[in-house]
Image 1 (cartoon, rainbow, N blue to C red):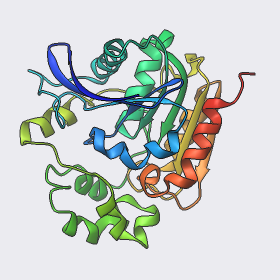
Image 2 (image 1 turned 90 degrees about the vertical axis):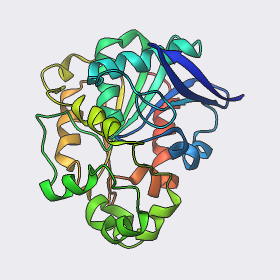
Image 3 (image 1 turned 180 degrees about the horizontal axis):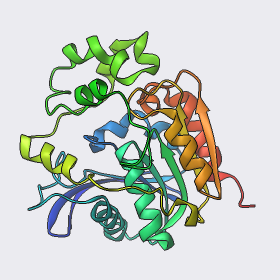
Image 4 (image 1 turned 90 degrees about the horizontal axis):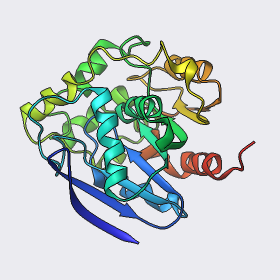
Length: 264
């Protein structure tokens, strides 16, 4: 099955893409991630019914009247599941999407089967990346000129991009459409942290993180995996912040093995 349609979710025209057959797997991307970003990942997710969407104000999804908080983004993600008729799904969240996935597991635990958190942290009370790196990463026009970004790719993202910065051109990284969308996206993440309640999550969780992530240092993943009772940490040697994209053939088999393993 393959569909790419517009659903009205909380009054916003929302791009939703469904691919494949099997257990449902909701994909929640990072800060500026749009549906096409998953194109190179989907071949490694054969056997799952993947559900991807553009978040509010990003890509083909309409801009809301006010910024969405992390909790509101989690609610929005749950309504994406409603829109495609799925009651319960595995959740794969990357970077900011991993933050949303944590909140989804907290606020809507009955909607979550298993949880995969990639290159993410526990929010504002975490180990920060270098300020100059974060400033470069979060610039509103950061992805508008991939040629210029390629020159800084290794320094900003780490991992394989240190030796192969040209891989950046193979990833579907796009800037927000305008400054207001950029401001709304960043404003919604302020003041959120999962540290006070991670120990209460009872969902089987896989935490995947590279040991060369300048944006979200590995220490954050160690904390998350330590606090969630049913969590396992998979450290990718030499992996950077974009390891799901630049090392999909290495990382995705670990994730699919976790998602298909019988429950103990």
